[in-house]
Image (cartoon, rainbow, N blue to C red; front, side, top):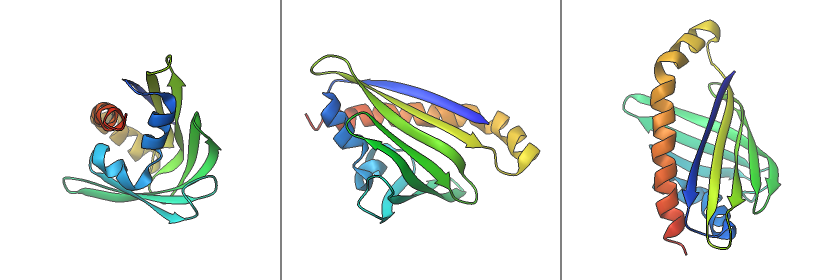
Length: 146
């Protein structure tokens, strides 16, 4: 399994952070190389999402189903596509009235078995850097909504 946990502090109340991170249509504003759309449902529990990622020549669609929906605290998804499999989600941790921490996590099954595990050792550090960069952009995005 591939476990990734990253966090970012945000100068915004938990409700604002929740609204910003669950604004699926605008995730592409802050998420590096990715555009998200709701493919079925209302964007809440049971809904399906498609996240299209394009970084250089690498292009793929991550298909997800929302399996946990607890506003304004937690959302979890099952990655149900052919390439990206596993679970992921985020939680919003209030830090007083006007600050929060967004915790983003993924627990993924490497594609292609042992070859995928080797590939992750090579690409994992860049993936983590991309997530950290995206979360810093997210903080700016959420703070602009205050």
